[in-house]
Amino acid sequence: MNHVTSLKTISSNVRPLVEAQLQATGGLLRLAPCWVPRSFLQPGKRLKLHPDDLYAFGLHRGGIDERWFASTTPAANDNRTEDEGLSYVVAGNERFTLQQAVAECGASLIGESIWNKYNKWPVYSKFFDNMGPIPHHMHQSAAQAKLVGQEGKPESYYFPPQHNNVGNNFPYTFMGLEPGTTKEQVRDCIANWNKGDNGILDLSRAYRLKPGTGWLIPPCVLHAPGSLCTYEPQWGSDVFGMYQNLVEGRYVPWDLLVKDMPAEKRNDVDFIVDQLDWEGNVDPNFKDNHYLEPVPVADTRSEGYVDRWIVYGRIKQEQLFTAKELTVEPGVKCTIRDNGAYGLICVQGVGKINGQPLNSPKLIRFTELTEDEYFATEAGAKAGVTFENLSETEPLVVLRYFGPEVNPDAPVMGAYRNNTF
Image (cartoon, rainbow, N blue to C red; front, side, top):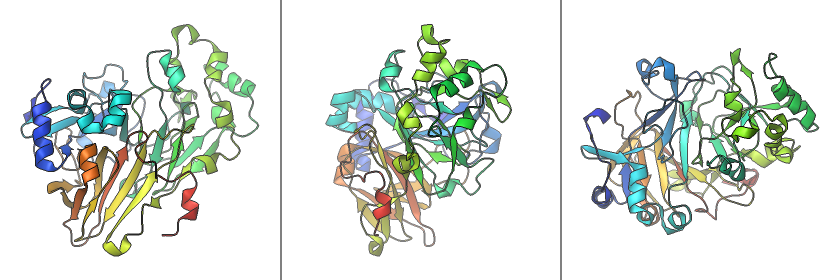
């Protein structure tokens, strides 16, 4: 298998390389794995990364518990590498970041609508994989993040069965706050940060996580993700505030609560509490308004494949991202047309995508290249991408996520209840 270290890195004038790749592949760019460590979390060991490479960034950086897909968003880690969080395009023996490709090629990659509004690829997705739960936290809204020169972050979850053969230590997620919770109760939790467990989870409710389902989480809503490996389409930002000070006996520093709040407000407990969307957190119908189950795009089972919506719904009337899961049965070939550009990861099987190799590896070394990840341009997606399952026994399964307002035909929240396929 080829290695990233054998590739020459190109940092400018990548347009000719991009155009040559798109011509050869029918609108696809092959991507190298993008690994991200977190110093305050314990890896869940389900990313297919070789166990010897879990701490490839160094023990001081923490274990690798995330893999980012089609990302042009830098990871907001202390002491991070220059390109941490950025996906690389592989073109023969050369590589360059997807961020650079989008900057130079713009609308020809991501479509005029997204390029004209955002001037970048504004979303990304990741696998998020931990041994246990993480702190009850929120992501700031666009208005709140703008105060510190950042962008807000709504996000979504899907729990792919292929990466969840074990649930690890705590496959439950606390979300929001119990209806009837008062701001004074939350204020006391923040004010008591250094007095032992601040008890924020006593005010919340945990939901059991089920592989093959998901959730849609708006900004300013508290959540403490559990220990399932999670596919997370989300906005291209890495802002957060941790509202829980002790997790499985591990201390959460105050800095992780206030890192994305204005400097003059970082000791203002009332300001910190007011960062929360109160109505959203104490919603008595929280599950109904956030829970997702797959909804087939159409009844194509007789043709040997099924494409399903796995992330859908709107946040304050905006469709910020969507995602689909395509399953192609053994020996089947199909062409799928989509409305916009997308990032794709193969989670099961072996086959081809527009004639290019596509397979889900069993084990990946830190510097190895894979054949499981691609970026499809808007033009390529609209023209149609052909998937072929080369196995005689195993389905070919891929996940793909889309940018804002790409899929006006996506289901609304709760649509899974009316699924007739």
